[in-house]
Image (tube, rainbow, N blue to C red; front, side, top):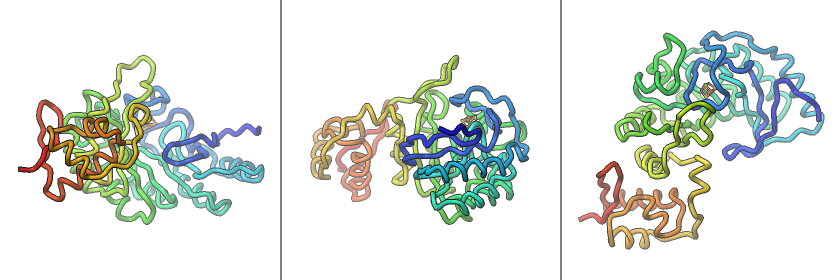
Length: 310
Ligand code: SF4
């Protein structure tokens, strides 16, 4: 198989199917140094946009890969750091589109989208997958370690502006880390920020394989479903660890959920395990029953319970 310098995969991706990665920066060039980053510490910590890799070389590789019969569900511009740092990103995506009909995804930390150049480049994608892990400057510093001078408020405004201008899909990922951004207060603050951005989907994740030498911990399943409830109907849990823990079940009716919750107040996990259904399915029914006024929500002892409305 041909060796490529800027392409990797296609790799199987739960969210994208078979995804061919297109690397736009050298390892590891980023404006963040996230505590959960699986690529290890950021070695080039910068917000400077420039031609980090030769875009002609990237396109020649892509052309060769396509000529060799390469197939994928997405071309994903991402790689060993933050792709919007590459000043030629928009050009690369536009030229890739001339070569193939494979849809283009941009995987980004979203930190530079407040800059018009980075935002214009992002518009070349069919799907933008930015991340946002913090709703306060303190948590932003703690979890993402941004370059000096980069403020969370700028990042949020960039995401809002991008969502307004972009005609494709935007799926916003939130990575939860135990003890950092998983309190009700932080989740509710994130929910308020997310409502302002209004992405098409919110994808909740947690750390599955912490980087070696760190004590970063994943959140438990209860926290994932709590975040799902707090973030609202556009949110879904994408953590692979959570998927594996949860038994798949047949479809269940709202009546069964109502009957179980009428028997005793339940958490989402209680409903999921009690009726053998996927938590996303339990959440769908619970959300609907609340909207119909049949259930009430109650937070106690750090957990969310659902009970029959009085
Ligand atoms: S934004 Fe992505 S590449 Fe950059 S440090 Fe965070 S996880 Fe790693």
